[in-house]
Image 1 (cartoon, rainbow, N blue to C red):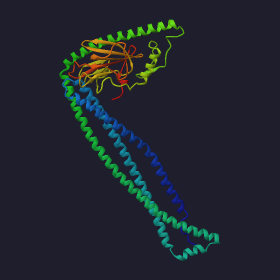
Image 2 (cartoon, rainbow, N blue to C red):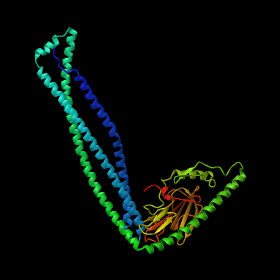
Image 3 (spheres, helix red, strand yellow):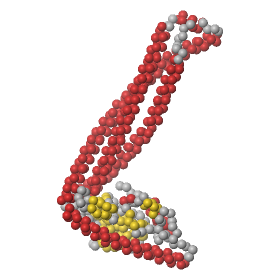
Image 4 (cartoon, rainbow, N blue to C red):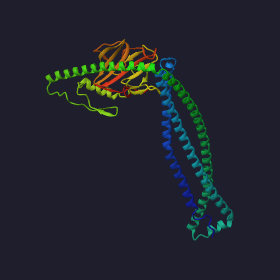
Length: 439
């Protein structure tokens, strides 16, 4: 009696199909995370490109103004930082493309090994069938059965063997097709890599030009260091004067709030003026709710103002930060200082200054030839200094985005406008940039 198929042939077939299925599942699971990351990278790139476009528009407006060098330096530094983020984003894309190409190479290698194995098995089965191709051998295999049931099983066995050979051919064709598909994907990925590398080179050249432009501005500022020192000394004096004015305004409001609370207590004794409200977070630390500005209207304003952290509108349209809040150094000069406000510059003076939130005008004051407006939003205060005119008066209520005046010229840096934007929580100054929406 002739054995037409080695006993382990069906087992081998099953094992190889199982391995193929497991590899396919593993590849699908591994591929899911990079796809998500690619989406994130593309989203991040679009956001960076939009920021660069907006910043470029602002920079072009002040580029030709010779006296706006400090502002241009800050803008240029922001452009450089964004450009570096853009290049880092491209580097992330390149790493993912390289990972995809590597995984594709591994997949092609695995499929090629599987294809070799399938061809070897098919070759063996063809050779074996050729050696045992005699019709007598087939008939002898069937008629040597013990009974009819055994003969029927042997016929069924021979049919399965024929189907197995057909399936072998199909597996070989399918595997060959997958290999060609993966190789085509590799070609596409290599093209994407070439495009990304070309873009990386272009953006690196843009970054180099920006750094050269920055060096020119820094060199110019160094040559004017004495003049800048005089300007900064004048700014420090104005900052001190502004601080004294604001301290007086806030103290006056605190006294008024305490007086009002005391009068309310006399009428309704059960009401406690020391009741505290939920805490809020500012600059990473928890601030206790005000025990001074705690009327129903104040509590509501406090909550609403807090809920709009990092979403407040800018006080001027198309303004940019030309001097950040807190300690600063101008370029690579020795000029240093500590800014108690966020200095916002504009290409032109006379633009409209707007309230960043609902509130009450608690003061309209003079600062030399310029004016300032202070608005209370519960326990929060926003101050807008260096206005050429004010269109509101003390005691008036304002809404978010309402015009409160026109911006005055920047005395230090020429024809552009400059706003000193201050924010306080009662007597404590905070960084306004953390509350304004991102630009």
